[in-house]
View 1 (cartoon, helix red, strand yellow):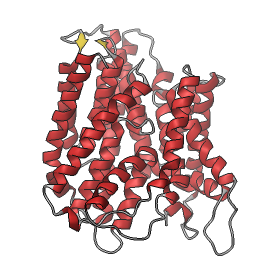
View 2 (cartoon, helix red, strand yellow):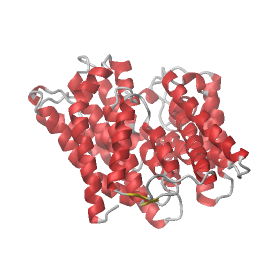
View 3 (cartoon, helix red, strand yellow):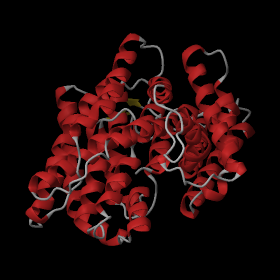
View 4 (cartoon, one colour):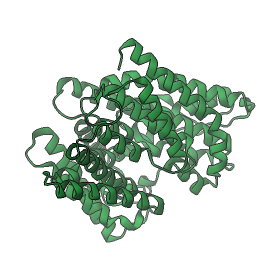
Length: 447
């Protein structure tokens, strides 16, 4: 049973519940701003920063350090621009990533309806079919409820016997590749935020073939190492994919009908609206049974969305960094050694990003820095955004210090270093695959 449905789940401290309300207000402010500009974007930015300060004690030390360094560099750049008598966009820095963090908080509501439907199976399948269904299942459900999908499946696999390294590698590869195409991930939000003019539909369609080949590569890489007939998988009912399908179709349809509305706004709006509608038709709390209906929605606002505290601070700080670097590039009229970004330059950026991720540099830092440096460079926005998605996907799978691997290590006693070693061969193949696709897409004029 998923955490949000447990009636015995402890209530969070008061400051955490206040942060939850503040985060929900941030989502509403961001949606209203994206739909009509009735309120300025900095309202959502202020709400996000207030929530981040309330939740700062929940931030992991590594992410606190990275966020602090980004803030220091970003503010230093802004102050330098100010010293050059340039107009400094303080409000822009305050709200640079407000739409992204609003989406990050909003998509967590999807687990209220998607997570329950994916955990109905009872029989533990085994064998080759179970392996491929587990790999595909974590990928498809991860495209909607993100890390929650991987954790629900890992918890189930861990019930009768400890989670094996093979199962952990299967989950990490299946989930890590989803950011190449899913519109409902933080990676897509970061890519769209840092690349003006990028098209969601183009990115999704371009990312799907890469993800499909990567999944096949990930699966065959594992099946050559173990006797897959002994693999114990997740009892996934693929009919439970109605919610992911409905959401994906809704986002694409709304984006087609309302092309001027930012994609992140549409995702945030639908992510809080669809679960609210579904839960409104469910019965309220019944004595002796877990809460259902709207009380679950309220509980999620107060106690669950504050769990994004680490990511919240990280992405807000990355926004300050990107605006700061951009201001320096403009103020000092700095130009890089090249004026055009093509597949070769993108490949170098991707390779550097993966190497940096392995040593602990979060992809959002690389993307924010590159976004600021490339602000005045002639680059096809879809090519750059696709490269950012690849940076994220390749980085989280390759790095032993990614949030995905640290979560598996902390909860299931899986060595993140051993998982890194298990994934190293696939990570190299995956990097080569992505570079080949970048050159192919450039040759075909896709990106």
